[in-house]
Image 1 (cartoon, one colour):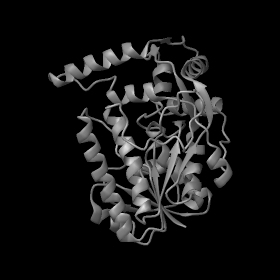
Image 2 (spheres, helix red, strand yellow; image 1 turned 180 degrees about the horizontal axis):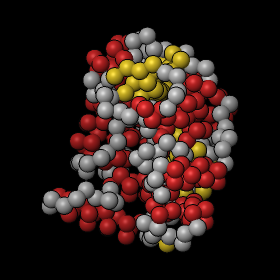
Image 3 (cartoon, rainbow, N blue to C red; image 1 turned 45 degrees about the vertical axis):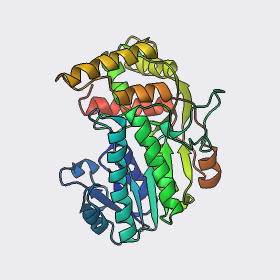
Length: 327
């Protein structure tokens, strides 16, 4: 398969590109002019320049491609009203889907988020069946946008576009240049993160997540969602493991309501001309919506299982962060 990866210079995109090459696919990197493609090292690939918001350039970049995995879905960076965040996110993704249709791409993988699933009240791991059929009651911009994009992906599949949804859980590993999810590891290991909000999570190594996304592109059923999961773990256990490996004190828990008040205060300062909030609404959404996940569908239909243990994923991430000077 001639497989295009969008967002290959990010954590998940890089590992997805590695997995695509390992599976024998011809790799095409679609990137913006400013992207640091040299970070991909000596991976064999061809490249095309395009922007997610520009249908024409994206359609040209995808011409002749069999499948595409979009690892660069919209993500809130500046606080906006939730309706505006939803509108912007859907517009970006509509331009992408229209470009895929114009280029006649045969398989499209949307990178979904488990935050779009309904939270189970019984505490059991959530599955792809736990989908919310109506917009969430939570008016958090990130929650609303992720739900809307998930719904959009499935609707586009119903309308005839070959869209499949791949949903990796909380991801850790090398090549996290942001860092993105690795902020937790860097924060704990550096001693700058001294508090955390407890809750349930599922965590997976980025290499496994990338391999799972390639399997979704290869054999995932159009219109279906696939949870790509690793280990179910409490945030307290996860933070303690990171602290132990970094030989630093374990951060202390703080109630969610306290973190929410801190976030609201920081947003208030931002509206008055202050700096962007450190504890954003997006962070609060992630902290408050975590739950255990069940990846049985990906195991049965795609023969996908995580191969890297969570402890090893943390070790690899710590080693890489030290090598690049983040620690």
